Image 1 (cartoon, rainbow, N blue to C red):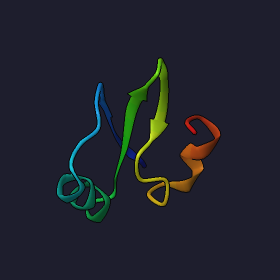
Image 2: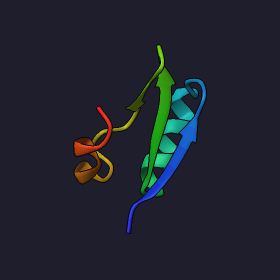
Image 3: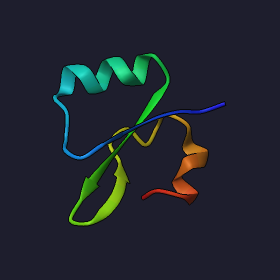
Image 4: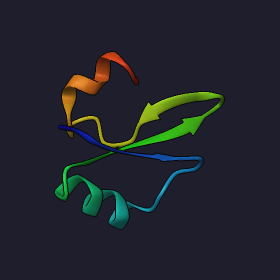
Length: 50
């Protein structure tokens, strides 16, 4: 099972690294699109988010 966190803005590097270590995929809105900030976490989500 994949854990996903949706955010409306970027987070700092330390928090992104922590989320990655905990296995949480971070998805942020950029220019009206949802993109993954840490694509190596849960690679299967690449089919859904860029």
